[in-house]
Length: 281
Image (cartoon, rainbow, N blue to C red; front, top):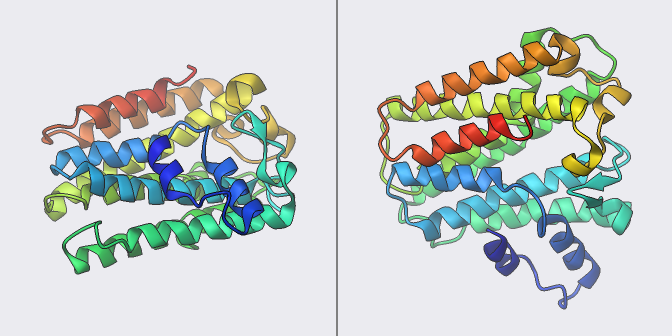
């Protein structure tokens, strides 16, 4: 993925050089690449051509990177550290960071429009729509808006889940479904099961994130530790406590694996569910 992203991102020697350098700074040399890994693992279920999955996986990762650049801005979460290095607006400036996010989002959809993605125009349009919905007001951006509006609020568990199904879960679900659209066609039952898996691992990812934010040091996280509590943000830890939050992550992991029953070649999806649960605890 690092090689593919490096190849697809604009050359920093081409104008505008600062913007292109900032785009590469924000995407390369960092991140777990969980979303691309999920796309490739889902592609295995449908005998997808890895070259096609690579396009979809890069598109998702570019959307994810853009969201981090914008989330870190002073008008959002106002963070100064991401992936163990200064955030984009600190390393460059706020205006450049804003344009980096815009440009990464545009590049993601340029990739999904590539003629080499699929032989089916209808399927390609469906994939473009899938990522657009997952990125917009009914997905990631909407979840971020809900998050900003919830600072200092005491949310119920359903409200917290609603927020993270959109903010974190929407793009994770899109990663899995985009990978599954790169190969043989799945029936509606199989797609529903796969979406169930993605929803569960997406929520588990956020629960684990909340536990790590409460317990892990900044050096381990690569971002500022304890910031959610300092900013008075509602989290699974603030609502449930660490012990119950961990139990919930285990329950979501179990449900994710159960959703894969009946699928062949699901080993990597299962291993990714394990990784999401087990990272740092």
